Image 1 (cartoon, rainbow, N blue to C red):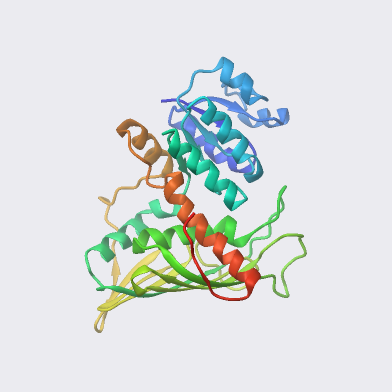
Image 2 (cartoon, rainbow, N blue to C red):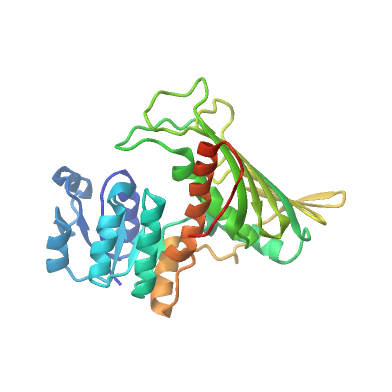
Length: 318
């Protein structure tokens, strides 16, 4: 299979190397011609126009790594030609727009998946395995802490929840196999942050899930203390024990015993790109299909609505 990489900015660099190194790259589309210099001596076709690439290159799917405000235009152009799309998150900046994109892909049976990678990490897969095996009984309370200093400049405002927290929301859904019911969130920019119009730097959230599971989420990209991993630190309480993910290490406590869990080599290390290719070959939905991922974006959307309303809200599915 071959992919057309659309977008060669900061996010595009990693995707370019990944596709190139796996022999999957057909060509690159980027409206800024100066970006071609990043290809070095590589001889892949480079186009400034998506339409030109459509006319001149043969490929099997698109990897959409454009800025979020451009996602929908690229996705819809691909859907017009029934081309499968692996798209960076979010589906679209606006929630209602994301719903329309997903509905079209579903209606026309066009493979559409969001590039969500945190859930594919071996330690996260192992935690899922432990939970499903009943190691700590029924899940009850989850506490998540994410703290880093992450001051970046780009063409659109930094948003903790949309940019990073959405990964944690996806992990919540993946690990629990449950959906959100009610949410209360406070999104804010604390003293010691930075001035950037439209930016969201900190978040505190209380989330009720199906099955009575409660999630407490605290996150900051203005923290000057020790950094957590990007996947955050987790404490998952069950009726028989607890699982912790601390600095990428898994600990299980049952009774008085707290043990460090090895993540064996036989835990399959998959990534979203390989999962998308597998789903195309097997003619099934990808694990983070647009339809599934919309439920993750729903949590972020209702967190923002709750912040605006200053109260707890029921979560309605899109």
